[in-house]
Amino acid sequence: MREGAAASASGDDGPHNRELYALLHLSPEASDEEIRKAYRQWAQMKEIATENFQRICEAYEILSDEGKRQIYDIYGMEGLTSGLELGPKLNKAEEIKEELERLRRRKEQEKVSAHIQPSGSIMAHLSLPQFLDGRGIMRGMAMASEVHSQISKRNAIAIGGNLEVSGNSGGSAATVVLRHQISSVSSIEVMGSVGLRTLVGVQITRNLTPHSTATMGMAMSLRDGTINLSNAWTRQLSETSNGNIQLVLGPESSVAVGWQKKEEKMSAAGEIKIGTSSFGASAHYTHRFSTKSHGRIAGRVGSLVIHQNAKQTPAFESCARLLGIFWKFELHRGGQKLIIPILLSRHLNAVVATGAFAIPTSLYFLLKTFIVKPYYLKREKQKALENMEKTSAQVQEARAAAEKAQQLLQNVANRKRSRQLETDGLVITKAVYGSQKALKKRDEAGEAKDELASQVLDVTLPLNFLVNDSGQLKLHEGVKKSGIMGFCDPCPGEPKQLHVEYTYQGKQYEVVVGDYEELLIPQAVHRI
Image (cartoon, rainbow, N blue to C red; front, side, top):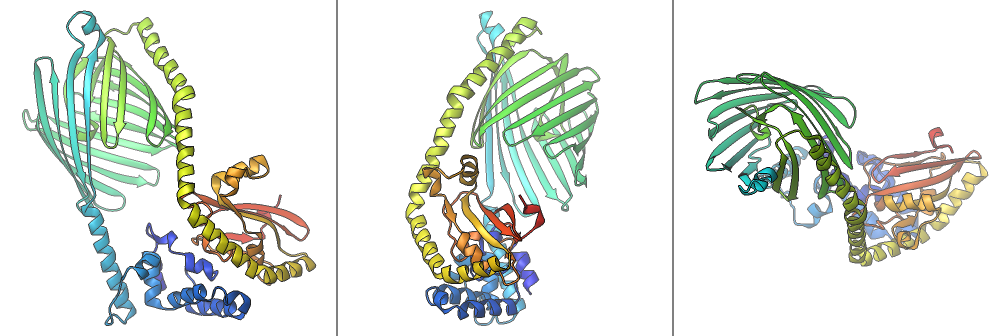
């Protein structure tokens, strides 16, 4: 029965529903006998259990009741305190599990029904040569919008439309794409379009291996009956980069080879494409200032280019146009985009190309160094301060409770430490728990700065208390460490780590683990 509960608790909320396990120092997979044994051990320590009697009894009451434990594993304390009831008739474990799964499915369906993502873009084509000739700067304009909805766990639909005006002519198109997830490794898309392109198409994607994917597509024009076939293969080259090859057969056949690299702060890509009547090469580099802003440098050279709309693969236009030298400005806000490409020259002029590259590059680095980066650093610092102020009362209360718990643990912890010192066993010499960023700066500076000291907590004493008679200490995987007796969360919302220094048989050791990672000491790999 615990296997079913563990599986149910493996979702997004799972890792957060572990405070009661941390309080009793248990694994989330602990058996009923282990829960009873842990409760008896705590109850025997009367000087500790008296002060924390309510918390320990609450943890035991919930974890020793199979029904309550399943609710806690799936929904946490919120599920137990928000009126979630299984009813008096649901006495069997199978009935409890079935009812919990029904409630979980209903919750997922409500989430899916609200999962509608609209997006749109406006593109204004500007031309400097046309403006200098006195014919106005606007070459054309295009607008596109799309609504994507996850109609079920395996099915999604996207409905979109676009409008394009160039000179005295224009056109529009509407597209519908249905996507079905066949299995965990394959999916199929069916697409139909009317307007500028009147066609139908199908595309199948399959993961061949954990590192490679293949896509096959076919599209047929309902106007002239022409058919386009496409095949694409993608291969992961490293943890941050991948390569791809695409072959298109039809009125305008082509083969393309590309490469992409994506890291936390930057991404880069390049492609070479050779067609029956075209040749082209393109590349771009993007640097991310934050999760909401980035700067990009891109270039494209070639003779002719066949326009391809990524949203409507595998549909291809048979028209071609000459490339020139462009500046392109983009503004992203939520799901909306404003794109302004400016044509600088229709010819591949070396002087214009050098200026087009050098001027925005210089402006980019100047803006990044002196304006954008300082602005975002200041804003992030301000947000961190606001978060600290908002949670300061909560943190102070939690710190006071942690200090009180440590005082109760002190006598037992000191006795355990003395016994380990006598046998040259495991002794925690220093342990701090808190903000990952604060601990890193603390290590670099030797000690925490005043503004960072409030984001870390000394937990040397409670860890010495948890050392067992065999001279070992184990913190279970998946259990948030702030729930351990004598711990607290000194910085809500921030990623946290535990830094431990200890001695064992006269040697010094050091280890750093994440908030939900397992810690087992002593280990030879921790030796300094």
